[in-house]
Amino acid sequence: MASTLFNASCSFPSIKVIDCKSHVGLRSNVSQVRVASLPIATSQRRSLVVRASNGHAKKLGRSDAECEAAVAAGDVPEAPPVPPKPVAPAGTPVIQPLNLNRRPRRNRASPAVRAAFQETDISPANFVYPLFIHEGEEDTPIGAMPGCYRLGWRHGLLQEVAKARAVGVNSIVLFPKVPEALKNPTGDEAYNDNGLVPRTIRLLKDKYPDLIIYTDVALDPYSSDGHDGIVREDGVIMNDETVHQLCKQAVSQARAGADVVSPSDMMDGRVGAIRAALDAEGFQNVSIMSYTAKYASSFYGPFREALDSNPRFGDKKTYQMNPANYREALIEAREDEAEGADILLVKPGLPYLDIIRLLRDKSPLPIAAYQVSGEYSMIKAGGVLKMIDEEKVMMESLMCLRRAGADIILTYFALQAATYLCNQKR
Ligand code: PBG
Image (cartoon, rainbow, N blue to C red; front, side, top):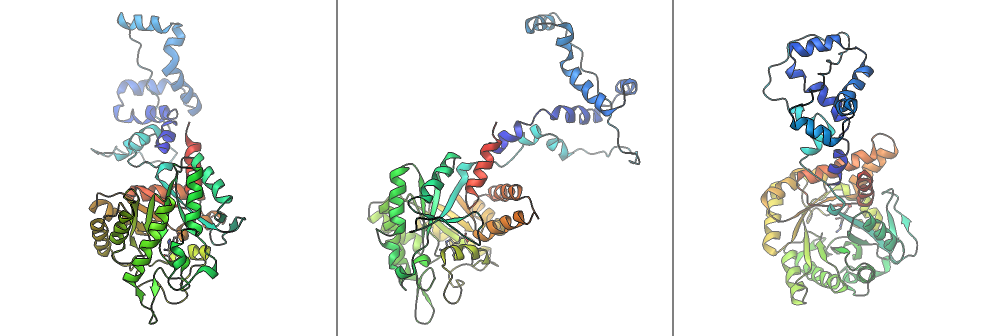
């Protein structure tokens, strides 16, 4: 919406373009005669066009009422003079116009026309802002994610949320950095009602009751093994036992006031189990955003540095999806739908636009896309090195996620992009 407003605000220059282009197909002998008699310099022609469109009323000094009366009496003003054909550079070939039924460029000819036919919009309401928190008082910069911090849960976090709300971002998702001493193989700190996440949710809800709080449901920040599930002696990630822990985690988050719990662990059957656990505790109104198609991606590197949550051994390929797979996303989507997910998420974002489009076309549920840490850091790095225009690439990447079919976007750019959109408004 905001970008449409922005585009629409640029309607003035369109006068020039329409005057030049729209006459190309209508060129008559009369207009050519007129062209020949007009001055040639470009600047003079421009001013002539402007005068022509305003000139009548001014020259005659008529009021609006007099103009109306004149028109009613049949005294209609003449059309403005047809502008001369602009000069092409020397050496431009002189040719017959192509005989085309369709010239798609007509619908791109000016900012106003482009705004009218823009198919996709983006607004701060589409963003969910991922925020890293820790127990400390300070905000600690995250080396691999320029512009992102581990925020002190009592100070920095509240300030960041206030900034986001001021530009229309009212949804956040929390990621905790948990002290090493609180981690164990079964990730039990994940469901401590007085742990960092539940405590932070209570504080936020007290200050901003209408803030939409998403939480991450997975064991990795709490696991001494750095995996999303419980690791057996032989390295196997135990599915059903992990789901048991995840249910306790989700209920603990709901009890603290979370609006949307988001299992990102990729265990089988966790959405249905979490739904049942929430309902059993009276949290029928808490939503589930399922990480439906979460791939075993190297784009998560900076995030794992931020939380110090790298798997201590092996990788996550026995639970996260193979980046080579497309149809498998449908299997996950069908399960999550059947188990009661409210929102389906695809992750990462830009390299997986085809998966976003697939789920958009195959499911009526809202679709979320996660523009992950590696995507963010690459754009930031390219901007710092002046290889790309950071702000334009940021906005384009977010628009592309929307075009592919994402309703909401989890992005570390949420504040920056929303600020940009707000500044575009008139
Ligand atoms: C862990 C989790 C990860 C991310 C979100 N939740 C990392 C992982 O799966 O290893 C990554 C987000 C990002 O890279 O921005 N459950």
